[in-house]
Length: 158
Image 1 (cartoon, rainbow, N blue to C red):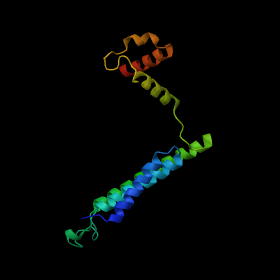
Image 2: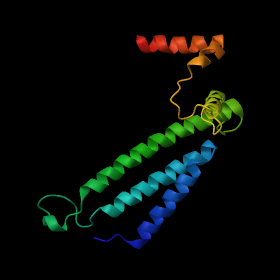
Image 3: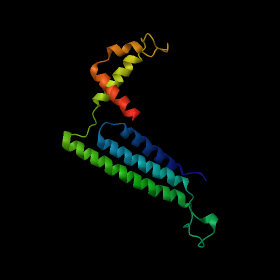
Image 4: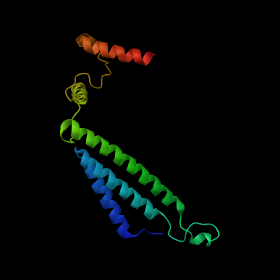
């Protein structure tokens, strides 16, 4: 069975638009991206099914019945998309009331960790590839970093 070319183009456009909107910083656009991506997935599942009569035993021969599995998967995808929509709507509403906008801001801690990683693995790193575990860097740690790593290690031991 070959899928209809119109369905394939519509699925491609919906998925492409959904992924593009998911990459935005506004929660409203992310919400629209999730909805478009969910509809694209539903259309993709729809193209995978065989058309025919209702899948009720005894009404028609088995060869003429439609495949009920894609229909069940589409119903499941609709429920998942509805749940994600409700969750993102709640996040956008809460962000709007707290900040006056729904833009997702950079996390300061993530930025700090990314800067540390870039500094450790930069192109000018002298011991890159030597296998040195930076044992001499323990003296340069601040008291705060020692307490953080100590509490993390204590939590792993328990």
